[in-house]
Length: 491
RNA sequence: GGCGUUGUGGCCGAGUGGCUAGGCAGAGCUCUGCAAAAGCUUGUACAGCGGUUCGAAUCCGCUCGACGCCUCCA
Image (cartoon, rainbow, N blue to C red; front, side):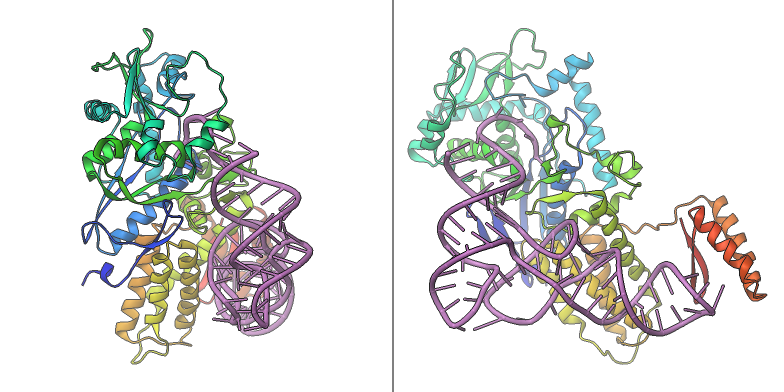
């Protein structure tokens, strides 16, 4: 029997602001859409956190035996710098500044994005569509919305009529706003706006003559509005209504609100059953954002090449750090927190490495089924990875007791225990087992030699010499670890 | 100003109306020639003020603070 029939997941649905039992539209299948990056610059660590949160969701559903279609888009057109009325396209701007083709910008940062996510061990989505690859689909949706009387054309641009839509539907259903308040709070500043109301948003924008990113349409040579691509691509690959839509908290309004309105205006059905929003990664008490310069690049974690870092960290340690917080909580990034996580991470991996040293017994002295279910319970409760990790550390204690033969497991129990421990750490959390000793072989040989010399000195009870070797190695940054089975070292 | 989230012990970070989160650091113990490492054990907490309750850090109200969105951002 599939695991998902035994393990019932609850998801916090942003639409209802409460945890709901997850029931997929088609049993055994899940359609999931996550808003991807706008590829106009390098992704920062905050971006990575959001995608990692949904990587966790994807991995867990797969583990439960669901057949998941995971779609995550690449925004390579239409994302304006300012509001949908006046700003410059982010990618076009970057291309202008660097004097390269917009598609070169897109290519460069798409490749970077993939490289970064691979380093952090995120699984690729099943479909990764681009906005520019779906211009026709977007135009068709605009036509449909115009036909339904919920969009209007002005000077070659098409806008969504939010007020008209709001007469029958609730614009603001996701973000808990109502349009009347918004109208009262809107600053009326640009008199030359083509929009009937400031809340209206662009579905199609006519391109200025100098604008090089342009496609033909019934209204003008131009480009699609940012919100539209997600509606077009999610509808195309997941259907008019699908299970899960995810993204960063900052996309809730207006982006996801607009998606709901567009899809409803187009198909007359609300597009998404469960909306999920990952929270922000903050740095220096402020949101990480490229636009403010308050950010850290994923690469800088790995190289240590950032002023706030005391040293480099393996990517998987950063992953572990982020998974120690729940995806809906704001997470505060700092060097100290990362250092603390790293120590915990190595303790966890040390236990993983000890698993093979455990010997099976005739009978079990502990009940592992309860522990296993507690791991599932953690994940079933809105993907609570911090609780799962706490349970895994309970498992670490158990492993140490088993190694010391203070507890015992039968052959079957041991097999199940090992499999569960490994599955949650590597398949579900997506951690990788790296060793802290990544020194070169030469250095390793030299240290081994010194260890041999020290051990000889110790046999001769020449403590002065043995301590000198140990302490001077320590001063050089090489730490000796005397164990029962000999001496090892760490750098 | 509006909408929303949030305020937990030295630090990071979970959580529930009454029962230990967990990690790091600290302390004690085991091991060791000493030390380190490793393992085991362990203390300090729920912003403030009211209210509901037999009982609240957990529910409600107010105050103060922080953050996000309200123009683009994962």
